[in-house]
Structure formats: C-alpha cells, structure tokens
Amino acid sequence: MTITDTTGPTESRHDRPATLLGSVLTGGVVGAALAAVVVGIIIGKAALWGGGAGFFLFVVVFTVVSGRRERARAPKPEKRTALAMIESRRATNGELADVPVSFVLTVAPEDRPAYRVAFSQSINLVDIAGFPPRRVVVVEYPAHEPWDVTILIRPDEEWARRAAEASMDSAPESTLVRNPRAEGAHCLVSLLAILVGAAIVVLLFRADLFRDTDPGGQGAGGHPGGAEVSASASLSVSGSTSVSSRTSTARTTESMLQDGRMRRTVEALALADVSTATAFRIEEHTMSASGVGGVTDTGGPGAGQPSFDLGSLPYERLPALVREARASSGIGTDGSWRIDIGHDAGTEALVIRVTVKGAQGTATLRADARGRVTEPAGAPR
Image (cartoon, rainbow, N blue to C red; front, side, top):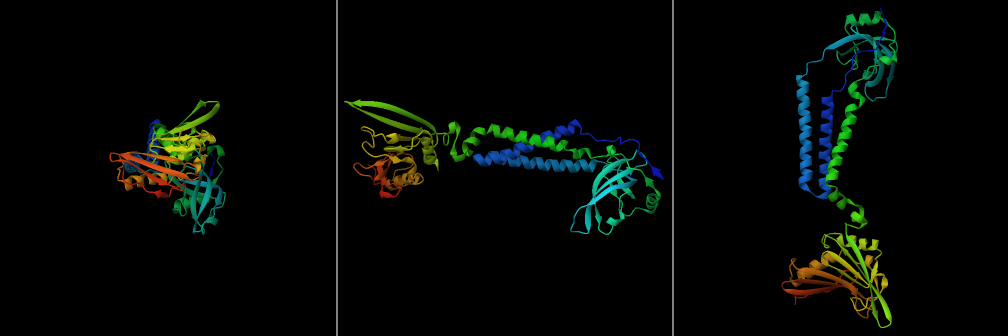
C-alpha cells in the first residue's frame, strides 16, 4: 500500500478572544499582587504586602480549582490510530533505561491528508534499534489534536500487519503540524500583563518606595533622605576689618534620632560643599554648621576656634547620648534636645554637649570627640 499526501492538514486551533482576555486579566492581577508583596515589605506596610500575598494565593487557588472543574466537564478525547513513517530520529543522553528520542514523522490518517509532526518520546534502550528512519510504525493521537502523537511500541496484530505491509512517501515539510498553544501567544501576553500589573503598583507607591530604597538614603533632589539643604551667606563690617561668616543648615522632616539619619543629613551638607565648620548644632529636624569652610565666625559659637571635619564625628553614638542624658537627668522623652559640637575656648579638644530640656528643667551631658561620656547629665536645673 502506498500513501501519498497532496495537501497540508486543515485543522488548527486558535486562541479565542475570551481566552486571551482571561490571560491578560490573570497576568495583571498576579503581577500586581506580587509587586504589592515586594513593595509592602520594602516600605514596611504590612497591610499592603499581606493583602498582596492573600490575593495572590486566592488567584492561584481559584485558577487550580477552575482548571480542574473544566477538565472534569470536558469529554474524554477520542483517540485515533494511524500509520506513520519515521523521517528522522535523534536520541538524547539519558541515565535511565528509557531515553528521550526526538522524532519527525509523516502521519497518514485514514480520514485526512498526510502531514508531518515533530515530538519527543521516551524509548527503552532495548527498543531504539527497532525505530530506524523510513520505517512505518503505528501511532495514536487525539482526534482534535493531531500534533499529540505517540508511537505504539507494541500495537495489536492487525495494525502491526498493516505497518509491515505499508510503504509511504514523505509529506512536505510545509505540512508540519504544531501545537497552537505552544506558539507562545498566551505566555507572551501573560508576561506583558504581569509586568503592567507590577508597574501600576510601583507607580502608585513610587514616593514611599523611592524615598526608602534610594542608595545611600538619597531622595529627591539628590540629597540623602530627601533632606532639604539651604545655605546663607552674610557680611558684617567692624571698623576697617571685613569678616565673612557663612552658615549652612540642613532640614529634614524625619527625626535626627532615627538610625542613620544624622549621617545621611551630613552627607547632604557635603553635597552642598559643606565639609568643615567651627561650630555645629543638631536638633530634632535641623543641622546647622557655622564657620563653614574654615571661616571664623565673629561672636557666634566657635568664634576664634579652628574648624573640624564634619564627616569625622561619631553620629552613630549621638542618639544614644541623647537617651543617656534624658535617663540620667530624669527628663522624659517628651522634652526637647540639642547637640552642640565645637572646641573648648583656648583648647584643641573637641567637645560634644547634649542639652535636654523638659518640664523639670534643663540638663547637659558632655562627651569627647569619640562619643565617650566625660561628664554625665546631672539633675535638671
């Protein structure tokens, strides 16, 4: 028996618009949920990441249950048996008895023109030699999925006899049948939808996200933590002597006592070319450097004293000094505080003074340049 194909297969399976729309919606929801989890963790919003995680789990469970229900309602596919000729085979390496083999077959159904199909099937090492190119074999496939072909290793006697007696011509390569679902339409659309959903969440929370994740604490304007830096210059004249005094101030909406806030704010001053000063003051939301650039102030804090490097100060110790001053003096956390840093008059010793003020009065703690307490805060006065 000689079987010759003349035309390609007529069956094809296209994605319906409803199915494609479902992929878009599912992908968008999944992307938004995953982005909500990540963004919520980064910015510290438990409600956001918890809601995202819960919604993601809901989508996964809903998809799994819906898929199982759809498969349960679908009728069992009708199987077809046909003769096929092996065009080529290629075995891949395997450590088990069954080796994956890539086949290209010409399939000749009884109810449609012959066509080509490419697929992979595991074949036992003992049986591989029995499937050389040009051999006619018996295959099985679902009636509406001609690409899902399986070679029957041991067909029944009738089909085995027909395969032994048949001779076939090769089908043209243009008749190659592929699985429409494997063309990547759903995958591509779902991936794009995931990215769009994630991007929407990131855009909605971009202010909190970029403020908290900018490297080095830098925020808008290129300054650490979004600190607003302002500098003012003034000129005073006394007799025939002209002395310039420059003061730079950094302001932030966050408390300076937060971890790392002081260091990041000093880096903001450094961006404004403020790296040295003769006197330095830190308060709840501000930093003020006087005598910037080694210019000696006339009458203000640090007058007549040498400048010092602002980056060398022990900022990581300063919040603890404020807490110690409040604890040793008995002043609660509701009061105000201030840190003044500068040289003692007539000496080269750099002194850190922490002043706390509350309803009970005012107390001062002194520490050296390394943040070690030299004079604890006494009772408030």
